[in-house]
Image (cartoon, rainbow, N blue to C red):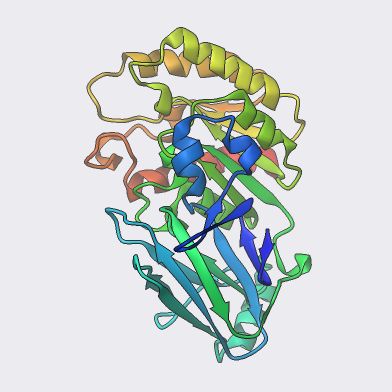
Length: 328
């Protein structure tokens, strides 16, 4: 959405608070139909949110602040498809107003030449401030800026739905989530609709995803958030069928996976859940078992569930191999 001449990518709604504007990745009419984990928490996490604009002057100052979080909240700066250099690569966002100064690089002409020669999807004139995956607030911007044009942005978009693994938890940096990395490798844009702890496969979520006409292909990561005592295999199967019944009416290419490998002792539900997803996804969708994408215990983090950075790289590499076969 556009706000103060900035393209707030992957944002559906700006909600004014005393700390600034928090950013929702889902519109209110969708949020209110979903479970409390999405409605009250993960909808407002900034995973996949980027502030995109062009400089008309030499610099601009964006002021942000972060909600309290156990992990450092870091914003990453890109000039189009190219990561910022050591002076302009990243900024820690504090729980108080944090000004971030972005300048026009002196080597912009070289960046343009590299972009043209390698057919990169973003113009280097487009400043991208990639936000971390916790809740952040936009306070304001100072400087002469303008909104990027469609021709300066990628022409194709990848949408990703799933758990905190899709969301980007333990990627350690937002650009290392698997949706960002897959989009970067395929030369397209991305919409990260991961919902940490809350991917419960609700029908209103599926209806919202197919209602969006701004994505070219999608991936669905199903299962891990329903391996809880409150969910039975029967309920999971009903949810999978209902969710995929909605998604299958869309003729865009959709890739589906099940529970990735993880290291907790209890695995019985995961085995059953993988069978359920395969049953309903194999015919209409491009299905890849979660164990085919990641099944190496050393690539799981200390919490025994989330992939480490090496695990995420494994998912990216193996899912890209599948996607390239169908998207080329």
